[in-house]
Length: 213
Image (cartoon, rainbow, N blue to C red; front, side, top):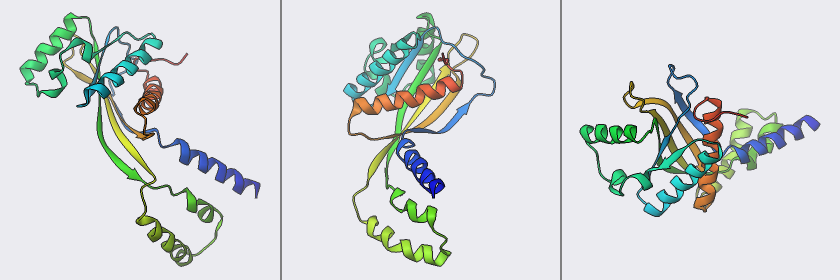
């Protein structure tokens, strides 16, 4: 009985905490530890106010970790993220950044949002029962159909972040890319804070930009 209760407690904690998490990542196999001398932060967001808040909070978070960073909103005009760039324009931008001492670019964009339903309500029956498939399916069928028409329990933002090296000998080489899910808290500042927590944890694990103390 004690084991069952412990399993339920752990499962409940995982259900509550796993809403903000890294779901996919890619690290260039040739990339070892990477430390930037000057990081350029880009938030690909059409809402200028939200982009400014995001880049500001992310830059402040890097500053606390002693990583020098600059917001794109302070370096280029607003059209930088709104207008499509040609390859020639990108090369010019890269050279401008190199001349300004940048050696890495961190780009973040929202891929989309998804509605999610809590499933933990039926967890106890699943964990403690020895039902046959038929008993379990028919026992839960009504609950599923009943919930189907209800309002979604929460929204997930799917956010992609890419880290590029713009070192002189490398042309915009992708070092790392991660896809992070953040549970919408109906508060932009909190959403950004939660995103930064997950991002920094994984950058540290991959020995990119940040290191564990």
